Length: 572
Image 1 (cartoon, one colour):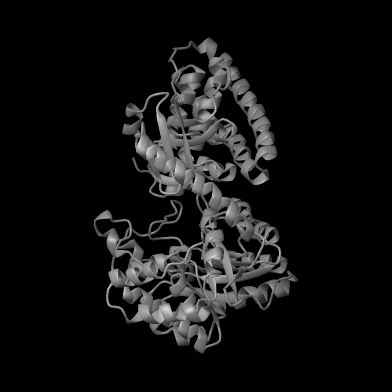
Image 2 (image 1 turned 60 degrees about the vertical axis):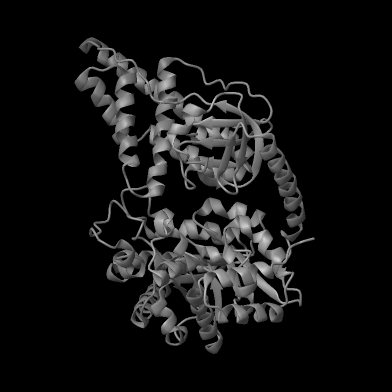
């Protein structure tokens, strides 16, 4: 079976089905005289839940670190959320329901609201609400919080794992987990990556009926594949893969604290993409030499109003300080397309990916854009910060964004607030039209960063989420390669550096082409960094240039892939 690869690694073990934590409360009609007693029971239950969460927060802080423990601080706020508590109390007072039933219905109402939103990050918060609800309900029902005893090599199979479940996993016994629900952005997936436990999520609920306790299971967290009761041949294949994976981890570990260097001694910047403050720790653990793309959308999601300047500043400063002297490229708000904010009245669009999004929205609504620009500028005082505008298609957009940035600088200077006046400015190259005017754009900027995910989408006219045409979304198409080469060439002509922050930057097969085309910086997901560092050491820039020149002469994707495959270099 195939799901979403949420946490890398390979595990072989025995299935342990986790009982579904569905909220189930017996309804009991109460008399008007009992209302106060039920309200008191509810209050005591909420207070005990907060005590438990404080304890779990401390345990998680010791086990994983302060950032991972913050989720349980958020859970404490959820338990005490005035709107939520008010809804439960109204169920007790107005409908004369017992505390358990009133709580169950309120949690179901809020969880369903989250699940119905289109944004993946917001959907993932459903698990947090259900986690909090299950905890309070268990307390009200007088049930214990004891964990079942697990045997070594256990693989947890569940509908979903709550953050509480994941934080309490015993790494000495649990080697992986698999869930029907969930996404890469769910807190359980984030924690799995912090714990270093392979995880595959989002398999769909039908698979739960086919799995039984005690089944032998293979979990491939690299590919998102699961094998139940595999044949001996498949087991042997994965035992070998597991051994190879362990050897590779040991081999690649030596690149953690060293610069990426080509065979002829040229240093190449290999940095990482992050989507929130929690991603910094794994990035540094994987040898990242900076942040080539700090997506800021997480600050705007999972809430009912825009974040203020101060909140943004604190988040940016936290990341910048954690990275020390390493560069941190902060991308301004890239909302729209597949990412909507419920509290912003965004128009319904037939083609949202071609619509009112990213820099277009920000320039149209400076009251949203300016607080972010000011926050980024303030954070620049604390480290090596660069700013990057997304979805640029015209020179006018760059000039307008730079004007607002200069305006923000003037305001901060007048207020006596420190910032880096020489902070570098760059754009994401995602639109083919931007490549065609790259020389003009480069004269107003300090760098380009190629966002291959969207560049391919717009070049090939392909929706990358559409399975029927997904084969067209490929970085090996000759047209895409020529756009990449032209972007780099424009940067070189105008003396600005060029990086890449799309998925292709971590593509092992494509790496020699990118090096040969003249790319200065590779930015990728943390899990790819060590491997790319190693591979860069197998090539000189000149050897890679020969491969790039040959690739640019080819006419089909198949020819490009064959050339790259035939010239692939690996560790002995």
